[in-house]
Length: 296
Image (tube, rainbow, N blue to C red; front, side):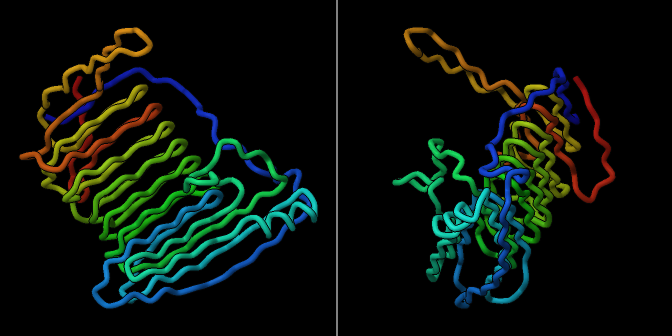
């Protein structure tokens, strides 16, 4: 049985992170390009972390024992004074260890004690954008995130991944690991060269979630779209829904159900979840001539 669950259509736009300094108000601008390489010990398993706020991240692979970074930094400010503040307050902090390369964009927009963006931050009159272009060995484990002003693109990765965006899309091709790809405003497209051996999650709010697996997929799939359709090119069979969860919240009895569809491809295996609010979930078979079919 091929899968398609048709729900209602709707248009919904979630508000994103406001720009720190609108381009129409910027009077001064500074651009800087830099390059750096990080050597990797033979046989070392490296985790690469990129924790950005404004700007995009692109990751490609090569067969060299190092990580190459090309970095474009763009600073805009309302005045010369705002530009000077930006240059003094925002920095790229680099931690290099035998098993970790950590690239962390730090500034007053960070929580004082936790490594996260603070909602109490107000417009400082400037905006600092870091656009990362990285070339890495294919076996690197990847942990990358940004919030605004750029898409995430990853190709050729064999390691596990965590790819997090907010206002921008995610595109991953030639992937062989497992992990999470999540954004809010934008599509998620992931194309596997090898079906993932571990559990994975693919999620957005406004956009389609499209994942291409290799033929012969054996996995349990959980698909959810509030205002869209669920499609699969693989022959699947339904699984029992999870039982409702009953809780008491503020003195009220609340019963929660998961909704969506739970199905099994092949003999089952890792659990993969796919979720969007405004968009479709499309599970495709890469390298086959299968057509998308829908049944109620």
